[in-house]
Structures are given as C-alpha cells and as structure tokens.
Length: 332
Ligand code: AQP
Image (cartoon, rainbow, N blue to C red; front, side, top):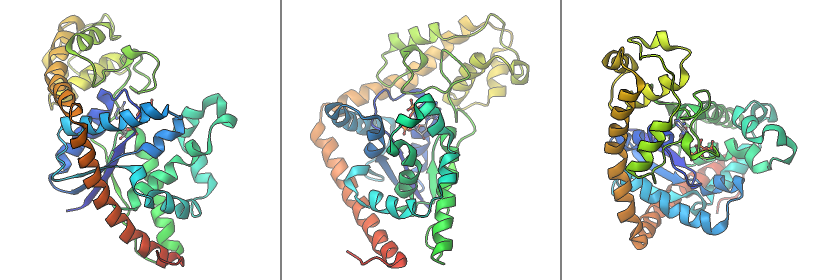
C-alpha cells in the first residue's frame, strides 16, 4: 500500500476534465492507499481570487469531493494553507531547483503568455510548491490528468536532487498515475485546447453545477463535423472535436475508444450526442444533487476539513523535523 497525494484548486468552475482526469481516479485509488486530498488554496492565490469567493469555493470543493465519492472516514481532506509545512518545505526545495528546470515548464509559458514580465513569482514558482505539497507527505503516487505530467517529472527531479545533495534516500520518487482514457479532456468548442476552468466560454466545458438542461444544451452546441462516425479512431485522426466526444463517452462508460467507434460506426453525431447527453446526466446529476445536500451542512464540511488538517499537520510536521535535521536546521 502506497500513499496518495493530489489536489484541486478551489477556483470554481469544476468541470468534467477535473473529474475524469483526477477526481474519479482518486475515488477508486482511496480503497488501496492512504490518501491525502488537498484543496490547494495557496496555489489558487496565484490568480488573485476575491477573498470571499475563495472562501466559498473551498467549501464547494469539499462538497464536490464528497459527492464524487471521496470517503472522509478513509481519506484525509484538508486545505493546503492549514499545513504550514507546505511553504516551509517549498523554500527548502526552491534552493535546490535550478531556474533552468522552471524555465522549461510549459504551463507557466501558457498561463503567462505575452504578459510574462507581469506574471507573478507565485505562478512561476508554482511547481516547486507543488513538489513540496507531495513530498511533505512522502507520497508514492499522484493521480493527475495528463497536463500535470511535466510538473510531476519536475517533482521527481527535485526529490532526486534533495536525496543526492544530502546523500540520503529520504524522498520516494512519486509515480504519476495518469489514466489512458480521458487523461486530457478537450474543450467542447475547440478540440485542440484542453477543457479548462478559465476558458471564457461556458460552452467549452461541462461543469459540476450544470443541471440536465444545461448539459443537454452544451452537448447540442458542442462542435463536431458533418461526417459519420468511423469504425476505427485512426480514420478520424484530424477530427479532434469528434474524437474528444467519443473519448468522453468511452471514459464514462468504461469502454475503449475503439469499442465506442465500433458501437456508433456509420451514425451521425445527432444520435451520438443524445446518447452522450444521457450518459453525462446519469453520471453527473447524482453528484450535483449530493453536492447540494452537503452544501446545506457547512458545519459537517468544516469538521471534515478539521479532521483532515489535523492528520495532515501531524504527518507533515514529523517529516519536517526529519527534513530540518537532514539539511542542518534546528528542529521546532
Ligand atoms: N481538461 C482536463 N482533462 C483531464 N484532466 C484535467 N485536469 C484539469 N483539466 C483537465 C486535471 O484536474 C486537476 C486540476 O486541478 P486544478 O484545479 O489544480 O487545475 P486547474 O489548472 O485549476 O484546472 P484547469 O481546468 O486546468 O484550469 P485552468 O483554466 O487554470 O487551466 C489536475 O489533476 C489536472 O491534471
């Protein structure tokens, strides 16, 4: 049995990509691993959210976790900011991280875009704090979507740099767990960019807050093409939007893309979209309903966060004392 660490930013607009790429896998993995599921609110600060919105997003995300099937009796749910070890370790690791490694991070390049000079240091240093998030628990497995692959490779590099610098075998090199299906869910409007919270168009993503009518409308409006579905995905290589919808169907119905293409071979997208809408509603509507119930009981959500924070603090603090000893700092 290993130890899992993963997290979502409480930045609102939780979407199908977050669910299929990350959250759904956590639910499955929590049965076999000691699991720490964080709400990475310090990372969210890089977008300078409105304080009251950040606070309400934190509760909303706990409700998302619980409604999707994270079991608070089995797994620990807590806000990143409740455990000061993340920042402390972040500093120690930043002293071991060459700028060249950070300069290669494509997420920073994409998010900073042309405003690179105005981008904040937090956004640039984000992957080092992410390394600290994971290594503070000496986690062995990190279930994420494919867009996080490069950051996870960096975490392994930083863990290795620490072990080499101090001649210890302290940090395990955490394994990214990236599923084959729906590891990267694409925008419903443009199959060449990933579905994301910050896309200005709501029609680009299916959100957890969408009711069945909204889901049906978004799928109806989702971009496709006039050609019928081919029996072999290889024959659809350049039809990115079509492949994305078929991939979502496959992930939700636990089938390979090949199997989905065979099932709908020769049919047009209007029929397929109806089937996809049904499947999405059957999966997401029970989660949305449960979220509403959880959100009506904020005391319970706060108690779950408190319990998770206590456990996370205890473990991370034990590790921080060992880490301080290794690097030559006085223990607390
Ligand atoms: N489109 C996606 N397909 C599959 N997995 C995805 N993830 C995100 N988008 C997709 C996975 O969800 C987790 C992200 O958590 P986060 O809340 O820290 O990420 P984020 O960057 O705020 O989410 P977005 O939607 O990616 O936002 P923006 O608009 O900022 O780019 C991770 O495991 C990620 O892989």
